[in-house]
Image 1 (cartoon, one colour):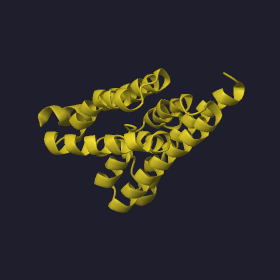
Image 2: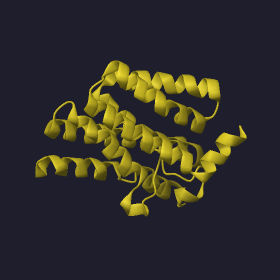
Image 3: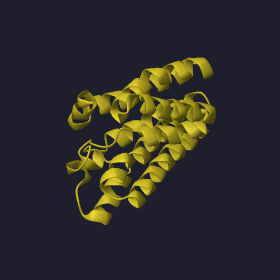
Length: 191
C-alpha cells in the first residue's frame, strides 16, 4: 500500500470524526450532547433531544462525511478496496479523537459510504432497517439485528473478500458501539 493510499484511509477516518452533531447541538441549545438522550452525538439523538432542524442537518452532514470518504478512498484504492472507507469513516465517527474517542453509532456515515460504493446495497440496508424498526419497535435492537443481516446482504450482492472484510469490520463497529452504550442497552432490554 502506497503512502497516498494509506493517507486516503486516514482522511476517511478524519472525515468521519468531524463532530457535526456535537457542534450543532452546542450551537442550538448550549448543551453537551453526551449528557442528554442516548448519550451519543449521532443524528437521532440530535433529532430527539435538540430539535428537528439540527437533527436533519446532522444526519445530512453525517451521510455526506461517509460519501466523501468513500469517494476519496475508492479513487485512490479502486472499486473493491475502496470499501475500506466504510469501516474507516465509521471508526472516525464512533471514536472521535477530538471528543475523547466518543461519538455516534455510525449508521448515517456508513449509509453515506454505501450510497457511493454500492447504492442498491444502501437501499436494501435502509429497507431492512425500516422493517426491523417496525417489527422490533426499538432502534437499538433493530440496529444490532441489522449488523449480521448486513453481512448476508454483502454476501449476496457483492461477494468479494475485500468487500466482505470491510463489511464485517463496519458491522462490528456499529454493533459494538450500540451494544456498549449503557443507556442504549438499558433501553433495548426494557422494551
